[in-house]
Length: 370
Image (cartoon, rainbow, N blue to C red):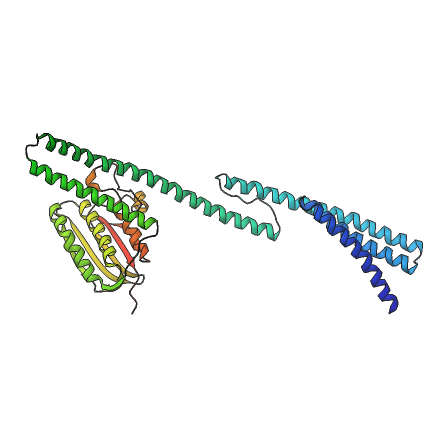
């Protein structure tokens, strides 16, 4: 028993010395290739075994022949182990370099393609994470391009819509100032109309800026959609009469909702104004509200003839009008963007789809708690 303990002690001391030396070498080459680190680890294992054997041999006075045999065995094991470590290290390093080049491709704006061939579980997991990150970056770039295009389009629309009424206001004010206006009262009424249009445009811009900044504070209360829709129809009736459009609100369920009445009135007003302007004379704009498995569905159906399928995803984008004709009556393209922002602030969503003869705008809101 005593001899066994002595052998274990001398073997441990020799292996520990090799381990300490190997740890120091690993710290010195910590920034080097993985191949070098693997070679050092294998060398430490073999050296620890040899040092332990040598210490035991010296202490136990083994024969020179036995020590030579053990040394030869350890040397052969060291050669094979180092060769295997170098091969493994080169393979892992090659796979890592391939991953680096693939990651650089999607970092430069391309898509990540995982290197072909077998890999360790860790490198395979890293490839999967890089592929998922590449997909997210591609989506982010696409959203950024769409947002930038929307911003440029909005600036173009707004600059035109502001310049046109301002030019008219300047011309009419100069005519009044010079005393050449044939009907000053008509000029004043027109000036008031243009000022109200500019005020509405500035109000829409302010509302949209609050939505994008996340500063839209809602004051929710429990109310019935029947009352909400009734007030909106009453407010839109003069515009519908002016355009010769019929307003219909026959399928309105008295469903309770918890919403900000002022903001939701703006949502309904924007949807109704948009539908009335897009519907030809003698057409019909219908409003409905009903329960669904998703919550409460509030819909506005018009007779615009439908929206091209390619434009449907852009309907609620800022600045989108669905036409390239920059006419001031079409608005600044902010109404539907404001609708989406207000609805999403209520934890709902806005959608649009084509129906025969027109399109149907839907606002899905959560049902009020009992």
